[in-house]
Image (tube, rainbow, N blue to C red; front, side, top):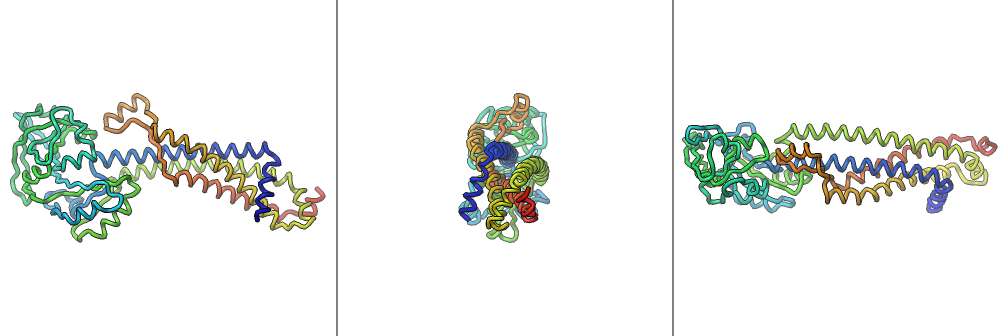
Length: 406
């Protein structure tokens, strides 16, 4: 076997120009395909990361009925043992409770329906960096009785930091909820809808307001990235009581997942078109190589080399040619991807402004997941093997007597 590999390697370099041209085309294809996939997957990662940071988190533990009917009647009681187990799970970065509901807010003669979210300010800040978005006043603390309101809401109500916000609503089990809250600060939320109607209270203040003592609508769970969501979900499901469920970001935002899957399918089709072109290029080169060497095959068969060994040697040549290009392509790709991972590409000015308005970083990110690059090498290996198989059939059918004379 080793002799066959050595012989195949030497045969590759008998025509250096042909080998170098074919290798260069494969290198370029792997480089282009790897970079294209890295940018595509990087944009998906950024999109998902921004979506979960704005609101939902990667996972949420809720009452089984809450997602379909988001009322305070479908809240969950605090379970410190369960929260501790989830926090200690592998790849779980942060667990924070929330109490969400609606209210009618008012200041002087102005009123507006608002979305009220009771939060643990320190933990929530680790998700959305809320303290950095405060434009006026100050951030709230865990024991704060005041409120943090969105910039759009403050403009509509004509209310500022230090003023008093009045809210009325319906609390837990239908009790009346009413309260006055000093406005501690005004923040700009990345989501335009939330920026027009969001009010943050500390968790305890929200529970007191809604008479939902010790209860939450959800526990938000953050992991390092969305690739870890599935195994964390399985681990949580094993310890959840029957009245609770865990939802992942893609179950909460199925439309986002559908958009990503559709775009990914388009990208993969483009890749296959690229590899189809490269496949025909390799096939043409190998076909010329086999036709030029028919007499050689006849001679070495006449002196005792069986067709099976000729086929093994030919298979090794073709696969080595493909893998040489694939490996060189990956070697060249690594520093390029590494550079753009450390230094994301800035978006054009107009697009950057639009992205910043939605709180999205105005950069084109790349992914460094190993499988993106391994898949390119595997694709080239499969292409080379298929082409080698076709050539082996050609050699197996070759009339060695005619080849020797020709």
